[in-house]
Structure formats: C-alpha cells, structure tokens
Length: 409
Image (tube, rainbow, N blue to C red; front, top):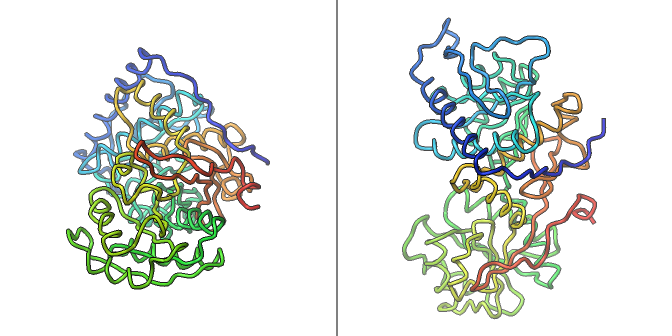
C-alpha cells in the first residue's frame, strides 16, 4: 500500500462550534481526571468507570465501552491529564480532538488515558484492554520506555511525543523534533555559507553534552570541524568563565558558535560574547528551536543569529484555529498531537494499517510542523526551515523542504 503524504485539511471551525467542542472536552477531561481515584478492577491495574457520553465530532470511549462489529477504530492517547503537567496534557488532548473535527474521524475513537494518575505502563495496558490498535503518546521518554514493550507484546505500534532518541525502538516511533535534526539543519546551512569551524557553549547537563555531540557529528558530516566546547553550570547567573575560555578558540571571520539555550539564560550569555571578543559581526551564532522567540531579537548580540525550526506559517495557522475553537493559546508541542492524530486518521482510512511498514513509508507525511517520516529504528526525520533573528522578529532565510527528495539532494 502506498500512502501519499498527509496534507492538513484545515476546515475553519466556527466560533460557536469551537466553543461547543471546548465544552465537550471539558466534560470529558473531568471524567478522565476523576478516574485517578477509582479503585482498580480485578487486580489488573485498570480503573473501571461509568460510560461517559461526550458530544462532539467523534466518540470518546470509556473503559466499559464494548467492542462490537463496525465499531470505530480505536486509537489510544496517553497524556498527563492530572498533576503538574495537566495543562500541557489538556492542550494536547484538545489538539487531537481538533484533528478529529477538522480532518473527519467519525470512524475513529480516541481512548484517552492519564499517564500521571495511572503511570505509563498501566495507562498502556488500559488502552490496549479497550482495543487500542495504535498508541499516540506518551510525552516523556521515561513513560515511553514503560509503554513500548507492553505495546510491542500486543503487536501495537507507539508514536511517542518524546524528543529523546533513547526512547525509540521496540515498536516505538519518536515524533518530537530531535535535537540532532535541528543541529544538522543549521550546520548544513552554515556550511553552505562557507562556515567550517564550529564551537559549542552549552549547559553542563545531559542535554548540553548531547547538543555538543550532535554538533561534532554534524560538523563532520558537512566537512567542518569543532574546535572547542565549553560548558557552564545550568542556571548559572555568571557563565563568564566559560565564555572567556571559549574566546581563546574562536573569534575569526567564518567561525560559528552554537548556544543551545533559551530565554533568560540566553539573554545572560549573549552580551558576554562580544565583551570577551566573540564579535557577532565576525562569528555566526547558531541556535536551536529554543531560539524561536520573537523577543530574543531585542538582544543586539543575537541579531543575525541562525536557528532551525519548523515552518512558522503552518504553526501560526494552526494556533489561530486552536484559539478560535478553545479561546486559548496552544502549547507549542500541541502540534505533535494534532499531526499524530491526523496521521492515524489517514492510515485508518486506508486499511487500517498501523504496522511499522505503514509508518515508515519513504514518502513520509506532512503536518503542522512540516514534512516528517519515521525510520526503521524508530527515529524521525523532519524538514525544518532556517530563521535569522532580527529586532522585529525572526525571518525565514531558507525555507523548509516540501518533500524528502528535496531534503536528500
């Protein structure tokens, strides 16, 4: 079976319909969160709950909904619907429901389970017990590692929202925008502009070291070299010693420094760079999607810096539709839930087939965050755009590819 790349079918949600959908979701959310206080049934770790009738574009199944011939295809959705990350989980649930509404999913039902109340493993078992043929989520790598072997034993694939490549495999496909992809893209572009010498200034954390290793691999791939890597304590208010040490290695025209940092931490580092003779007029500053913040253009040292991120236009359109439906702004990773649900809907209409072969089609898929495709080892490849920071906001200077033929040329 050949599946054309998914293209978003962006039907406008009328304001009144959007509010009705938001109300329906609120009702379901309360039922889902309330399940954390229900006793397990039969010692299986699954919670039993009364059937909940939820109006909306597609049915939402309760744990007691029986499987009958002709019933909707069941997709598990594992999210944190309680606890500290409940707001994020609710936002992603709403994005998934929005996909059902816009794309059309009357033959698909979401089985939503709370990973915070139940834990990843129990949430996966509950969804599988209710007939889930594909699992979307969880968000975090630790929960994904719990879910993957359980789903694999049942012959069910997992599309996780994690960005940790270590969570991939064993039937789990990682959908998050991996750090290595971002580094490859921006270094590839920098190399096309004649840059060959790179350095890293990163937090002394697993993430910081991962980014430094990604820079090393990308530089080698694009015929460059990493001349230095300096690390500072995460959250430090004075990383000047690391910046000063880095200045001994870089500073010449054509050098580039990657700073995989965000927000206030990046604002502390940025003015230190020219102070220690890392002149942004000579040294190109590189970042990641953490730089996708219009306010960073107010920091003079960052103006002209490059970073890789998903195409902004499709995200903006998605965010506007989401706000019209729910009167809320979506969390940034809500697009992953939307795209994953859209992918599930497309595969459901053509089979359904949620096998590894169906998920790893070479042509890939296209969604809010641009084109993407899964590899056999469970990782994701994506087409990102390159942005340049300016005072008035980021500007796209190299567009995201439209298909994987362009990406691999």
